[in-house]
Length: 109
Length: 112
Image (cartoon, rainbow over all chains, first blue to last red):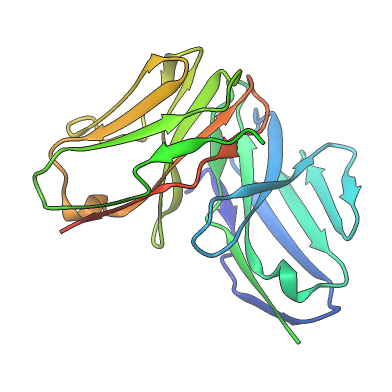
């Protein structure tokens, strides 16, 4: 079993749709959680950190559920420019950062 | 605009050759990660360092891969000998302590 698991998708949605990604992790001692975005043939870039209280950045909302060991990312009012692969990342207390496989999102006109 | 730099950006080599990839972390960052990305396996952690000391290299095939930080401004990943299955994009990322890391543009390696 992988330490961090994501549904690889692809998710094909129309513009304006709301889409949610989930990511589960196996190490209950994990300390930090992040969502990265990766465009085709580019490096991953931080989208947002994920906090226990949940956090929002514009159309993006991230949540953490420690009891069930999953994190989620919600994108509202999808734009064509949101098309990318979204990677969740989980860090141990020592700072070892493990990524999920990534979920591909394609937003269509 | 501080960035992680990686060289070379592309490398094509023949099986059996030595490959060395270099990374310059962002100035002031003390944590460096090496990842390998393929379509099949996704982004795999190979090794990471903090304050130049290796903390975990369990993801790295020990018989052919080695990672070092000769100084705080340079991290290297070496493959010797290279094999076709090593073809992938190798990313270096740097961060400050346990904060999220910034990625370099990657080295696209093709082993023929």
